[in-house]
Image (tube, one colour):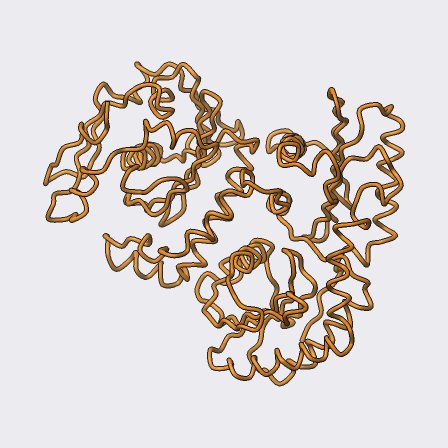
Length: 511
């Protein structure tokens, strides 16, 4: 049954009335609420799960028609309502349903803002279901976080002005999907410059941020498909570890590059950050002494540069909101590539908007000095070296090591080894990603976190180790004995300690 055919217009009511009381306790025996024993049943830690036999689960999954009457605003209040009623709904469309994951964003009033696949107008029914479920929990002074049914995870992130939801059949757990939705939420705030969004929602009830997101779908899409894109993408590991990747570079070279940038920026009074990045990796950061950048904001910067279409010598100046740094304002960002021969991207973040000409001149001076000192070659060589010997597992001298991740506990930085065969193919990379997602979920489980995990499966041995110094995740050949695996694990730690100054940035330079 099509949802839109069942909806009718009522000029005096904005409430959704459910036929047969879809969520009544008498009709849905499969609903169970798991609540942290240390908290009240009405706290935000309540997780609602639906069994595969649940009627509501079948309806959301599309295997059973949803039958309810929706009393929607009158045509006088909503000029878009006739459009919603005339568009085909994708909820039962096989081509739409074949996707592994869907992401939806809507306002707290229920207005569609974004969908990962399809068009918002054609998904009015599922937006209404999401809005109803959130309001149902809210009416009980509770918060819905997730539903698991029929091999799918339905995950919700409720924010003051927005609702984000994901329907996923990927390897990400509920907590990992919520982390991903959180990154998407901050990306939306960055696009909207959250200070203006907050004021607008207070001024008018009909405020719709979807209009301001036009043209920015690519940014949200890249974050939403980190775990299911059509290419091998290391960004999945940066968001899982809440960190960033560093370009391996000799510490003396990195320090000299930072000194050149720092010395050229001395005359700029309101400059807060100067950032040099390449290939989704940080080369160096120079910051104003009292300011720092959260890893989430860093990932938004990387995401923007990754989708930026800019000529080698082009310059872009735009407002840029870093929501984890300041949700009440935005910076003036000056973005440019160093040169045609070195495609590293240099970004300046200033609290003033009238420094474009000064920063353009400074960028040219920095590029010339870096080129004269042959640091362009050093940067290009470091990028090439990553893809060859340095970060391949065999560089450590452990042929049975297939892959590893390493994160210092006191730094928000992660080291991700390159992907040798067979993980260099997309199918095998997906398999490796699934192994890591399950390992992360075991070690970082909210209810029963672990310090060490060892699992021997058919073709691999997976190890996770969290200590006061580091987080290590590694995949070995299944032929190894457990004692040998432990010896190799210590060998990885020893190698990283020897190469630490090259692989990580212990302390960022300051102006």
